[in-house]
Amino acid sequence: MNLTTSVLDAIHERFREIFGDRFQSQVDLNRYTSARVGGPAEMFLIVNNAGELQAAAELAYAQSIPYFILGGGSNILVSDRGVRGLVIFNRAREVKFRSNGINVICTAESGANLSSLARQCIAKGLGGLEWAVNIPGTVGGAVVGNSGAHGGDMKGNLLAATIWEPGRGARIYTPEELRYAYRDSTLKQEQGTVRPRRVVLSAELQLTPEPVDVLNARANAFTSHRKQTQPGGASVGSMFKNPPHYYAGYLIEAAGLKGTRVGQVEISNKHANFFVSDGSASAEDIRALIAEAWNAVREQFGVEMELEVELVGEWEFGN
Image 1: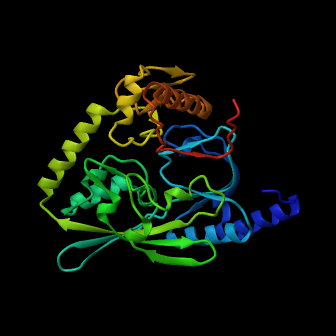
Image 2: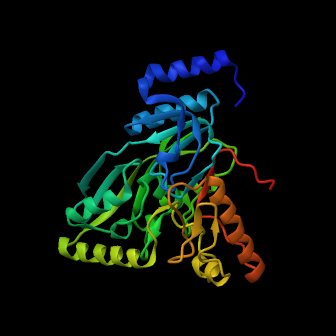
Image 3: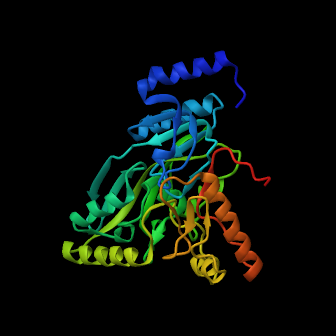
């Protein structure tokens, strides 16, 4: 983004006119990510509803400013060097329920916390989202990445998503249009490309009435399993997608990498597809450990694993 100081000042002033002191410059992102790493956002904006989210993305697009939507801060690794352009912190969290006679439709804005939404549905006696009871992140992130666990995923719940498309405006997308696959969608495939991204504004999820005690029992079983199999601490979440016919954690463990450390981050002894730190690691430490695990698995087993985590910001891969 090569803009003169006067043009940049004018852009900043425009954002401040609309959003006030929720627009800031040079904001460290480490406190907004689950791994507790990340350098500064060149521009940073907090939005509180789907209308503001769309307005912010439209303004950035009109000014040719790169933009990135930040939700729960999981499944991303933000560079120590930070992020150029505008980071939009999505706090659009309105949730509504309506019945269609048989099922209940939940309309949730994309900044709603997915785990909290799952627990809210359980408390209302609405089944279908229990798989998400311990998943960090937001509804929008789940729509993009087809998040899932315990045999469920977003594809199984989603009826429709309202998505803003650069230069064209907002419209409703069906799950078929999003071309869902394992932890993948057309939206996720836009990551890492130079084209401006579409932005999820809200999602409609289908739920089924069930007894609260049944739902709680199911959610508690999922929670217990997660505690037994996944580590705590600062982490970006599951690092690699499971390759066909394999588990990524098994491959990394079989390569002898459990407990391997780079700087202040190590491959968990509990689950090798989780890289954890004490909160003082750098993003470069994590990236270097990613590269070590990827290369070891490729060399020993001939499997090229695909990241589930997105690398965000300014990176150098020459070393």
